[in-house]
Image: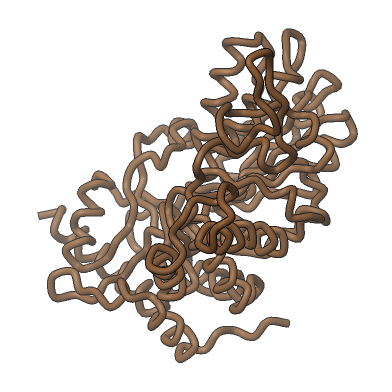
Amino acid sequence: MIAQPRMDQVEQIRADFPILQRKIGNNRLAYLDNAATSQKPVAVLQTMDDYYRLHNANVHRGVHTLSEEATALYEGVRGKAARLINAPHERQIIFTRGTTEGINLVANTWGRANLGPGDEVLITEMEHHSNIVPWQMLQQQLGFTLRYIPITDEGLLDLSQLGNLLTERTKLLAFVHASNVLGTVNPVEQLVAAARAVGARVLVDGAQSVPHMPVDVQALDIDFLVFSSHKLCGPTGAGVLYGKRELLEEMPPFLGGGDMIREVRLTGSRWNSVPHKFEAGTPSIAEVIGMGAAFDYLQALGMAWVHKHEQMLTGYAYERLSQVEGLRILGPGPEQRGGLIAFTLGDIHPHDLSAALDSEGIAIRAGHHCAQPVHDHYDIAASARASFYLYNTVEEVDRLCDALVKAQEIFSL
């Protein structure tokens, strides 16, 4: 059993993040926008600085000392990523620019090779746009059918219809592990088992799960998993696509150019081996190395600890927010959600609410959060969202709730 984090432990963690010492106006920053992007610890900042100061060179292409050092640092991150998600082999780790690129890579390689008229792709109504738009674009070109698992008013997937939606025509089931609006943590094991029963492949969007809880791709039997560096204490511009080895071997390249080839002649080319087949051109070297430092940081804390801390914060925040008059929480109860809560507050526009909280030093997100179909379901244009991470505290939740009450009073004048 993982012990509840003590406040002095959380304060020690907070000391690792220089930006958390900032003040907005006269108020200490309360950063509650972690579902959009997380803050970065000194270990990540220092690692990237060291790369540029001491090892800066292109990777894979040189035999001089700097290039060999840079290559070793860069390639070493594959093993760290594999350990984080328990991938069988580091060669199953493809570096991308983030979750969005990972999904697009699968759509434009596996999708183009395996989908056509008469086939179906099944996703859900709670997806981020990055797991809707690529399939819509590909559908227009290839003529397959795109279907959606609906959501209930409680913010859960309506699995009562799964038997009708998931059929022998379904080639891929692609779904978000944890919703970035509803917070809902979806039943991966149940969904994967249903997909296997009809021979469908499975892609899981782990953008809001891998940074916050233990994820084991072997135990879950996932075919593809995508996630981003910047949501797990790492830099922007880097991410991971995990794929089963046999699928990656069969898939054609995504981009053409340097480093993804084994041989190029005027009469044709042969591709490099996995994973390099999917990594054309000079990669985001410093960002990937920084992402590796973020993996180290999280592994040292323990993902089970991170998850337990967020569960505690989310349960507390759910209870406190439920007591704010006129506040409507979107999604299920705290026992079925990850570390975020999206809500509306009376007739106050979420953007106005976010601006009011910012004057108190509290950073939240406002808008449709790149998930317009979810907001359409609730017949609202936008919501406010507070999202928590390993460095957030109960005191910050209290500040959030007090500021919401104050905003109510101001906007009611």
